[in-house]
Image: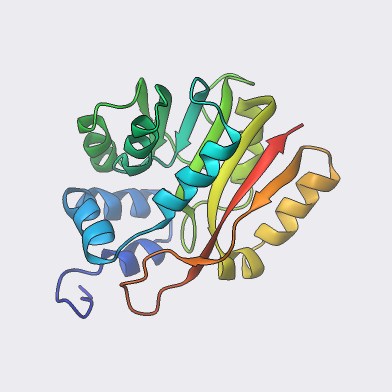
Length: 213
């Protein structure tokens, strides 16, 4: 298994190279116990903090919201610290959901995969946040259709997206098409920032915020 310069297991490469949702879930299950330490403590992961700061500018703390791709609950904990209390989480990995559950900030946690039908009602949420999910080997642009469906008109969808993935993997076209079709409108695109600046060969990210129409 590949290792980074500090000598611990580089699970990032494994999840980026996953060929299916089942493989991706399995790789995250294996990583769940050390995920927070590896990404935050060792690599200085910044997209949860940046994403929550941007999200909080546009979504009130009493909103009913979905953390799509909740992982170990890093984003949920940051939101709870800001006063958000009505948070539902979903993730494809049982192991990651167990870690999220231990943080005790979610009203509900469910195993689901972005890109598939989501077992939520239409217009169920006031907002969605999705951080660390739209990247290499993860959720595809078609995932936006279901996120738009489960957010009420006037609600917000905020997500992190690697800049290279935006340009090269169909996100640029899909996001533009959804605007042209009147499904959502762009509210904010953050400045570029490094997602994990202590990790070698890190990539730039943006946080995007759209209003559902």
